[in-house]
Image (cartoon, rainbow, N blue to C red; front, side, top):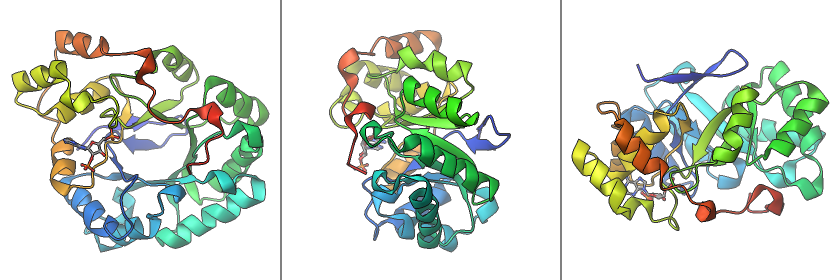
Length: 278
Ligand code: A2P
């Protein structure tokens, strides 16, 4: 069986998940269905991706039972606030046609709106009601995490962040470790701007192991006990990205990848931007 990561609430999450940002709603049933067939058991969507209905369709059409799948969605910024968040979670469940989510996240802190703390209280309530098994956040900085922990005593199970060899988030990993918050990594292949997929150092490591640059990067995440969410709209690539269980990066490979960290690796909007993208 594939590896799982234990969460602070007693649940566990399949470590390698399938991200579906930018996946067209119409393509989602086919692409997500192929990913499940390739072995993925963890699917990461969001209200803002506008493909929940398509993801739900893939789940229903799949031969794999609901109880063997781990499904995440995320709350849109414009739905923050206690009542709105609870209502919005119900709408996600309706679109997905599911009775419960495995994980529901606040997508961005959007600090200028100052709603994320009361939104977190709504997620705590939703978990108690059984609508979602685990709750967490995304794109939160330590200051945002500290505030919701202080106000509720409930520690998020995960924080989903952009994390890849060009942006390793080393400065905040210890905070997550100390607070028992697992990090989920989006854009693990570095997105387009970082050009990591064309990086010669990564290519050379891949060549040595008979693996692609994408597989090398995913392996780098796995070996650090990070939850990793590669995405692809192409089933062949999604399948390759799941074929990472038959090799191990050596210490010198890892050291070369670790050396690719750069402070300007930031390619997406930042948590304090009050991001409106989603
Ligand atoms: P595509 O959907 O066309 O396959 P990320 O933002 O997760 O780091 O990914 C960056 C891009 O890398 C994705 O949009 C995806 O585009 C592409 N990609 C995913 N898997 C692979 C792969 N195995 N080889 C090359 N490109 C990939």
